Image (cartoon, rainbow, N blue to C red; front, side):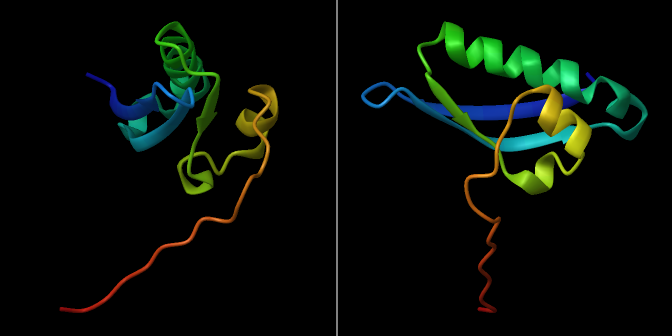
Amino acid sequence: MIGVMGITIREDTKYSEVLSFGILQEFKIHKGKMICVLMNEARSRGADTITFHASDIPEKDIQNELGLSEFTKDIMLVKEI
């Protein structure tokens, strides 16, 4: 195993969101290819749109190569309990 990616797809809107994304450090050179595989899988399952957290793909060259555009800024909320 070189990484883990998890997505959700809403059948009614055909909207897909990447919920988890992790690649072992020594395989980071394959990140773009892995994202392509993920996008193709989402498409094959009926998704028309896919979103990622920008923090999962900070590399601008990969973003540009895959045609990803900024939609919103990543926001993280936290509360000590």
